[in-house]
Each structure stands twice: as structure tokens, then as C-alpha cells.
Image (cartoon, rainbow, N blue to C red; front, side):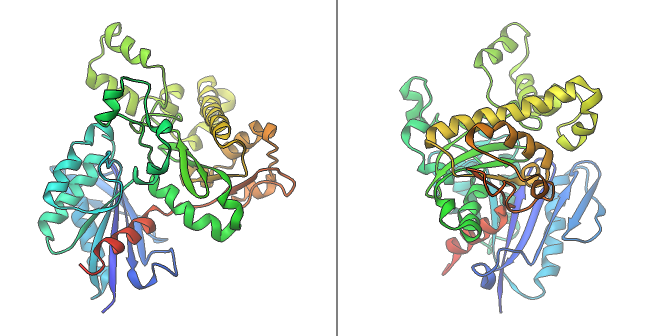
Length: 394
């Protein structure tokens, strides 16, 4: 009987899911079945499965997240069609200093991971709730945590240390980096499509509702824009990115905001949403840009921060051979890509407008000094491979 691995990628109001046949993991990157439950907690959630028409489902308002997990489990059982469920893999944002590799989760491991919730409050608690639910209801099925921080353990110490008292670094207060499963997928996909060029000086721009950049050399992370938490670096949909820490002190001392209020502001009310006052989604802001100064400013600042941080990583790499756009905005928003490429003309970046408008695999012109590409990410496939490796022979 063939075996499958279920992968869960849990956010605060949505859960992405995918089912992989372990016999096809090496040869193929696509899932047998994948989808997403959105708007969890709204009373009626939206379920998307592959290319099928989205449907709505009523979830228990008392425990909507648990109900969403139950809905996925029920649908996954139908997709298994008699095949054996080998493991459930979970994307877990933060593994701290201890967990540098994927791990099979026990109750003791789960308790340790819960201590990292303050470092990733948008994702960590929900992934751990899913793990706890499946541990309790399916104790015979291995639960494997795959960490977004793992990929960045190759960065040099100088990129890890914060300019704070060294004792804090020894206690785990350091730059970790995130979106690691997405960046790890690039180490598989880019050489297939672009050969040895992908092993040179590469910057990957993971631009979604959360966003970061990763500088790679020989397909290993050497620097990244996110640091101690997923608030650092680029301006994002609702997150601020890097700001002067004095602003936080001012908000608490002068504006008299509580710790909880400051946290909400930085995570949920800043970024594109905060500056525009309209939306966290560039697709909504772009049509309004000509007649709305704040929308225009939000988009200009968003692009400026990307360009500025790319420049910093180019300095670290000593040049640039390839720029990669991935994740929702990176893969599908030609306007944002065009503006970033235009601002990087000083590096010899020359866009191909037709290829870029069509979201082609290569969006730079043949004469461009830097190859600029679009590569869809596949975090779920990476997690499935890790879960297989962790549970093989178990």
C-alpha cells in the first residue's frame, strides 16, 4: 500500500494543506491534493481545493480553528482513498537556537516550542495548536515540525549577533531569519531551471503578506533581512519591518500605548495597510494610486524598502548574478517587479517588459547583467521531504 504525507501550513485565519505521495516526492514537486481554508473565525470559512470552485463551510464559532483542522482531516481521509498516512508535516515558524533541523514532535518538544510564541505570534501558536490536536487525536501518526529558521543557520556569526550586550546573544537573543522553507525550495528549483548560475551570488525576494530577502552563495544562506522576529526587514502587508527602536520607546512612554497595543500596531496595523489606510494588498492599492496620495506613498515606500535592502545584500555578496522573485506578490505582481528592476538599473538590470507582464520564468532582457527570474515557491513539498526523512524506518 502506498503512503502519503499531509502538510499543514497554519496562519492565524487560514490553513494551507497538501497531500504528497511519498513514492513521487523525488521525481515530482506537485501534490496529489492541495488547498486552503480561509477566513477561519468568520463563521463561514472559504475552502479552496486545487482548481475547483471555492466552497463555503460553517465552522464551530466556539472553536473555529479546531473545526477547520477537523474539516481538513475529513477531506484528507477521502483523498487518501485507502492509502496509508505516514506522517503530518507542519510548517513551524520558529525553532529558536535549539531546533536547527526538522524534528518529530513529542509533548516535551511541543512544550519547548510554545516558549517561542512571543517571537512569532502570528503563526507559532496556530501551528502548535494543529500539532497538539493531531498528537492527541492521532497519537500513532508522527507529527514533524519543519522550521522556517533552520535554513539560515548557515549565516556567519557576524550576521547572527545583535549589537546588544553579548550576554543576551548567549541567551538566544540573535538574528534568526525566516521564510526558510521557501528559500530551501529555491535550492532545489533554481539549479534545475538555471544551472550553475543559481550557485552564484543570488538574492531571493519572498514577497507575500510577510516579506523578506535572502542572500545566497552556493545555494546557502549568508544573510537575510528578517532577524530576531518576523517584524524585521522589509515593509510588509500589515507589519512595519525595520524601524528605529526609539519609535517603540516613544509609543510606550509618550503615546502611553500598552505593550499589547504596541504589538498590535507593529504586527497588524502597519506596513501597506498602515501607510495607505486602505489595504495590505498591492492589487487593491495600485488602481487607487493615481488619485490617492497615501496609496501612492505606501507603494513607493514598499518598493523603496525592497530596493534599499537589496542594495545592502549586494554589498554583502560583493555583487549580484541572479535576483529571484517568489511568493504571492513576487510571483504575480508585474508592476512591483518592474519598479524594483527599474530602480536596480545601476546594477545592470534590464527588464523584459513583455516577459515580466506575462509572469515568465525569466523577466530580464538577454543583455541584462543580472538575470531576474520568477520562481513559484513550494514550502509544502520541502516540508513533506523533511517529514519523510524524519519518519522513514520509524
